[in-house]
Image (spheres, rainbow, N blue to C red):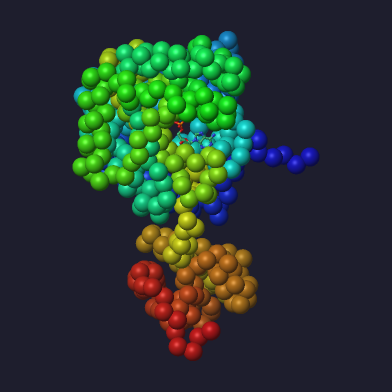
Length: 427
Ligand code: HAM
């Protein structure tokens, strides 16, 4: 029987890895330009961490965690990155080191969802968590950074949705108003939402079920119920976004699937149709109570996470990376030792070099160089050895030249910096 990868978990094969690396490097650079430092936390955490922070009645905690028991301990593969970062922040008392912390992470997350395009059981997130700034200026700056990142990645077709969930007081008022609106419509709700009406009515706003959608269509808006401090924060967010010229739309029904959010909430959705129903490219918001809830001091925080698989689906096919490999093709045994030395020398100069250690006919060697996508090919035979030269071929420009043995790396570097121009008369 052929063994396959686990359902919903994907291998990323060598010919796809280039796109991932490109994406990761753009994200790291952009995020680091904003002063974030990387943090790496384990993929396994205590189950309790997620139950306490994400909320017992969220989809993720109720249905989607991969849990394993070990020596009487319940452990979960992390379904998201915020709670682990906060756990690390609190357990290492990072708050004592500086008033503001900017942390980012990149890595796999795990949710036992029904796999489909853009939705996997192991997926990858890049996320930032900014601790210590109550906003709303930094909230707007984070959203603006994300818009800039997507544009740099060539994604133009998206919608930025923002909302405010207010603080505990606003939430309690809204919860009551929503429950009062839905109570007379209880029988029209999905079975799942009927249950939610009792324990977590805000979750009903997340439901995609048409029965629930109908019932919430004219539900009260949380934005009409914001308490004065929350309203000032919300107005401040919109003023800062306007000042930055960041595009956004207000969506008072946006609640997102996790219970830890307070005040600012945002989501960027792909609008180009590449993602089907799984169109949330990224989401985030404030979670001003979580650090204290997990045993730390009272500190405000905001963050986001983006799904890298979804970003890759929304990105247009990239231009293939410029060919930069130099293939070293020795003809004959004597030349093969020289080829090993040339390969080492090229790499010492930062050039990707592949040495053919099997030998063979020149035609086959060149074919292999082409199949590897090499731009240059160094050919060394007995004649070249005796003359102290090599033949340096530019496979894209279809040109070649003799180069003195000592000049190979310098000449190869110079050629790699040029755009190939086809030599006259070449095919
Ligand atoms: P989230 O909305 O659950 O938020 O996930 C963020 C992003 O991860 C989604 O917008 C989506 O792009 C991607 N994602 C989620 N689940 C899957 C899946 N099964 N397959 C593929 N991609 C997926 C969070 O995780 C929060 N921790 C964000 C945050 C950070 N809030 C504050 N700080």
